[in-house]
Image (tube, rainbow, N blue to C red; front, top):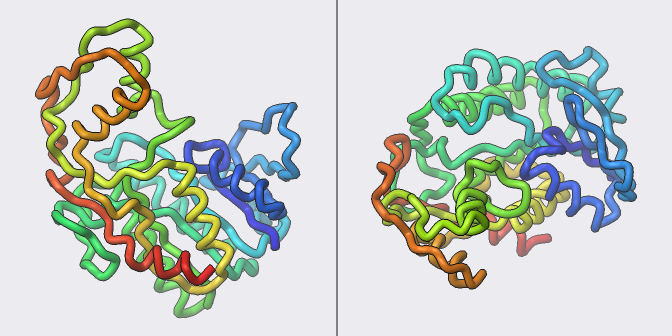
Length: 280
């Protein structure tokens, strides 16, 4: 089996490549301009391609893979930018449609918990989507477009809704890297929100493992929450990092307001994920 990965140099992509290499799966990594380190001994074929301006023979250039794990998406982390549906959405659909029309049979795309919008509590895949920001709207629209495409050009679609990921390689403005820098500077306090919001956090390495497990099934999965299934307060998460690492830093709670584009308490229901993983 050959699996291609777009967004291969991104936060999630790097961990997906590690999973594929560990399993000995033939892999094609797609990136716009970056190339792998010279010391990278993994058997990975790298293809330079900008999916916004993808060539007509993109599927052939990718080596006609059996599966595509599609992680690429521009304009993040500005969730409110109109770029997501004005520019990114049409380009993404055009690219994926061209691959399907050229012969791609299995597609795994990463969505977002923001597709659920301002709904609170445990979120399961059967809930109606109510995106409340441009990023969530664009992702949800792409999913709907691909479902319509399936009616005229059958292919297997998996839509992995990611919740909150953390780990090596995440954006520098994310919570954990900011905390790590504050500790490295010797700060006595770390500024953050009140920290009482409940979220669903999953190590990125675990999420990457789930994505590959799902992609390997090569069936029409539909929507699957990729999450921990456990609500954790942001304050509790940060306090856990401090405790586990033996850091000495206080929390300056309430320094920043709570985000207005997400509810105070929501997390993923992972019943469907666990069922699918048990089947592998």
